[in-house]
Length: 124
Image 1 (tube, rainbow, N blue to C red):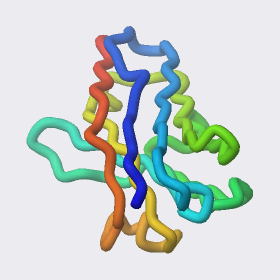
Image 2 (tube, rainbow, N blue to C red; image 1 turned 90 degrees about the vertical axis):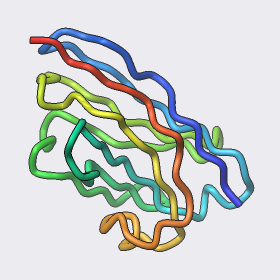
Image 3 (cartoon, rainbow, N blue to C red; image 1 turned 120 degrees about the horizontal axis):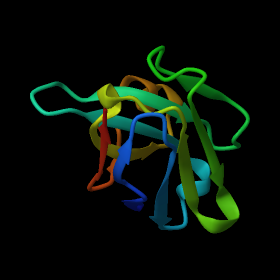
Image 4 (tube, rainbow, N blue to C red; image 1 turned 180 degrees about the vertical axis):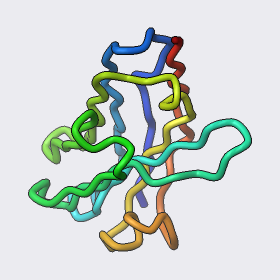
């Protein structure tokens, strides 16, 4: 079992940066791929980024490439999402997800573990 708790969200102006954290409890986090998803009001949840268990393979949604960076520290059981050059359209609840299957996380399907989400609001 893995419990995930996100933090670091908030209200910022366009162009600012935020770093989200995903703290994991459970011995198996280091064997899981980890990802970030987001859901804006009235929209479906969408994939943002994923990182494999070793931290050497990542993938991003086109909408955040070059602005967001995903990373992890398995010694601290924590994953991160560094968000730079934020835009109003990045406003959403951001969720952390983890699963032993990298492709499950990439697809956002059959993911075993989800956090409760953290709100990110970007004002123009």
